[in-house]
Image 1 (cartoon, one colour):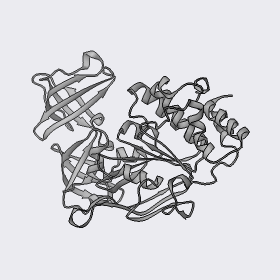
Image 2 (cartoon, rainbow, N blue to C red; image 1 turned 90 degrees about the horizontal axis):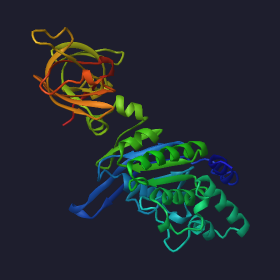
Image 3 (cartoon, rainbow, N blue to C red; image 1 turned 60 degrees about the horizontal axis):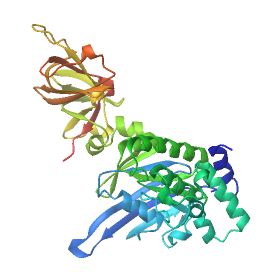
Image 4 (cartoon, rainbow, N blue to C red; image 1 turned 180 degrees about the vertical axis):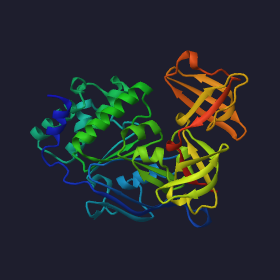
Length: 382
């Protein structure tokens, strides 16, 4: 039996009927009076059944506190956690149809793998035959049946994480919660595990809320990314929208690398574009709807949208280009990253799969161009 077939059979009976999760003005404050700190500030979020949502943001933004309130480990100061129409605020964690996978794995060191997976089912007092059957399916779904009689300290980090996932899945939750589950693994194993988690989640259709500080995890796993800042949701959208059309300068700066170019707004069209003057040129670029009425705007250009062309001694920069000098040139194998000094500031450029002969050395004169259709005009904040 394949792991996906085992997972199918695992959830065949009593599988979650829905899993629609709503956060309504969810708030958490710590302290009293003038020392009160608002960790989560009136968060509203609708999560569809079977959707994979990632909470992403800097340390202290409120993402882990939000997850803990969903799980019931933290009592909200205000608001609601609604699952399939039922407010879960007064329901203790062990009574919520949810399961959590922790950063530390949270395995019982004195129990063998099989008993760790069976622990939650034993608390439900399932008949022995049914319990054993579901544990076997859980082990097979994670491809760890060969480790069933080992202790957790006899397993690698990746194997321990599979045990934690199997333990969560056998509970047949309506919602799976992940608290930075891969942060203790090495880079290569993290990539492997995040693909496996996403593959199983899509196959099973379990609503999932995932907390991470790793942008690559968020981009590669999520149906939607929820970017948080200072306890609030800055933007909730698909990864490609978050990256290409961020709602705010904070989101643009937090997700990936970014060049913010000073511009003069000349006109704003009804088709979602604007004409601006940037780097001495007049160009037409995609624009955020709020840019039209903003007192000040800035143009986001991702480093991979910058193109550099060598300028030979005596040559002039062609129309549409801008003169610059390479101050830093770093070869990473699959990419070369440049910093280019221009009269309008330093611009970062990333070139993928470069030919060695085309790599610009430090001190080289170059012509700077960018893909106008991949730029994004934003209101400047602060």
